[in-house]
Length: 146
Image (tube, rainbow, N blue to C red; front, top):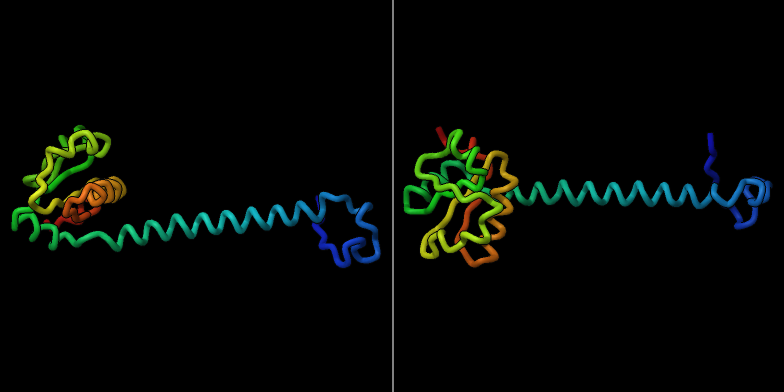
């Protein structure tokens, strides 16, 4: 088992010259600490991004009101997922085809997007917002009121 030591005065640790400890001792501890910090920062970034995406979603009842007022309801799941069950009045426009089929979506009214878990609908909402569309992210299909 390796021991990690800290360099007290730059030349020796607890009276023992650094050469006896080996140069790896100090640098390895610094590298491990950097990796822990980098991993922690990555986790904060990923979790923060998920939280922010969830905040941009609309409620099921709000989505239903928008659709009743004329908004287009778009399911961004695959055709197979769409065939296995979808919301009433929804059209299927898979996420991987969204860029090519953008012209099929209305420009003059709101768009509500959804998927199975909310991840794809979040990406679709971002793409549509960048394209200048009035888009609302319902998130997962189960958020729609029964």
